[in-house]
Length: 228
Image (cartoon, helix red, strand yellow):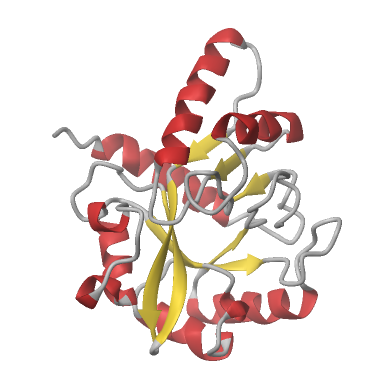
């Protein structure tokens, strides 16, 4: 097995630069870091997702299927083929991604993994199409595994859990999380827009704990500009 850490490192550094610029207007037309395909619980084929990403004009995005990178891999093949046939076109940056279940403060949360090396042994247990158990299910270990694989860890939709985001975000920060999904549409409005109150609260906590702010539509349906 050959692990290209140099490539992963460059990809991760680029993603950090993007995360530093994310604001309430970044999604869904410029960046989108949360979406699903038919390879987990979404309805989009990777090829159709890619066609939409190109049509929207996304600059960068990540496919975050649950415990699975098959959608990402199919999209990567599609993008490379499209790039060969459209050599003069602007190419969006596609980062590796996955959504991973984890235990935090005795609550199940979802942690988004980005820009990781897909062949790294630390990330492998989390890409088996089902949640892990035992120690591997603990948030601190999920985050550590993502970091070992060269990636970044982000707490998905912090205000959607049984436990308050006012508790979960400090705990996630203590466990080494890199960012929070600050700009998220909790009530699935049309057109998509981040929920004002939750976004403001999450952004404030991100500032207090030195975390990146990210955004994503959490698309499960047939339109990358909507959640459902």
